[in-house]
Length: 69
Ligand SMILES: [Zn+2]
Image 1 (cartoon, rainbow, N blue to C red):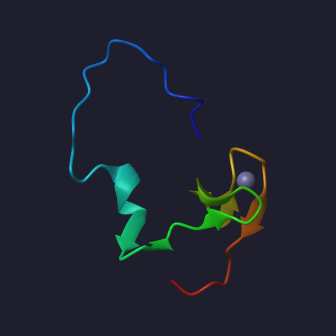
Image 2: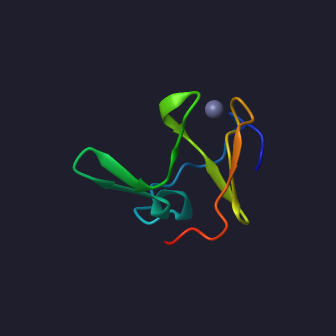
């Protein structure tokens, strides 16, 4: 995962279907698929990396292998 986004002069485009957001489906006030970090709490999502979930904040990682989607 890339480091923090640089605050550069890149033009910001509002893409409704950014790849980033395809991970985070919000239904009502429940967030599916994207899992929140059990340590950092809701709002801090775990990055999906191969069959691992990883928190970039506290470095928590969790295996998702064998999990149903
Ligand atoms: Zn965390």
